Image (cartoon, rainbow, N blue to C red; front, top):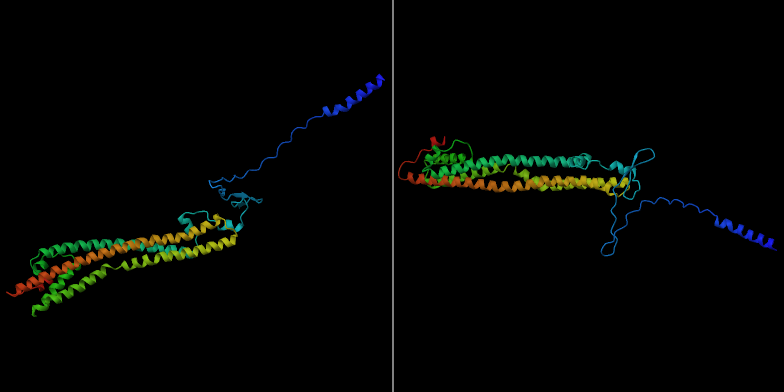
Length: 315
C-alpha cells in the first residue's frame, strides 16, 4: 500500500514538471514603423487646417532615370517633366516662351527704347529752345525800336529769330502802303510761324501717345497666347500640379509686365511734353507781342517823320 501511494505521487510530480519547466520565448522584434504623415492641426474654430503639400521630388526609376514625383508621392507623367522649365528668371522665361510671345516681348522692348529716345532728344531741344526764347523776349522788351532790336539780336537761328525777320520783312513790304493794316499783316505772319514752331516741337510725341495707348493691349495679347499654350501643355501632361501650371502662366504674365513697363513711361512723358510745349508756345506768343508793340511804336514815330528802313536789318 505504501509502495502504491509512492508511485502515484511520483507520477503526479512528473506530469507537473513540463508546465513549470517551459522556456519563455523571446519577444519578437517589432516591425518598423512607417513614416507617419503629419497630423492635421486643429484651428480655433475646431476645423482641421490643411497640411502643407510637399514639393515634388526626383526619384530614380529602375533604369536610373529620374522620375518627377507629385505632392501626393505619385510619379507624374513623362510629359510633365518635359514642359517644366528649369530657369524662372525673366531671361529664362523669355527663352522658354512661345515664338509669338517672344515677338510680343521684343516689340514692347523696342517700343520702350523708342520712348526713352524721344524723351532724351525732345527734352534737350525744348530746353535749348526755351532758353533762347526767354533771352530774346528780354532783349525785345529792352529795345526802343524794331530797328535797334534787329541790329542787336542774337545770331542764333531759332523760332524767335524767324519771328523778328518776318516782322521786319512785312514792314519793309508795306512801306508804301497805309499803316492801318501793317499790324494785322504782321500778326498773321507771326501766328503762322508760332504754329509751325509748335508743330515742330511736337514731333515724336504722337509715337508716345500710340505706345502709351496700345502697349498694354499688345502685352495682354501675349499673355492670352501664353496662357493658352500653358493650358495645352497641361492637357498633354494630364496633370494639374502647380509645378506644371505655374511656369507657363508666369511666362505669359511676363508679356503684360513688359507692356506696362513700356506704356506707363510713355504716358507720363507725353503729358510732360504737352505741358512743356504749351509753355514754349506761350514764350513765342510773348515774343510776337513784343514785336507788335515795337512795330506800333515805330509806326507812331513815322507819322511825324520818315519811316525806319528795315531792309538792311532784316537781311
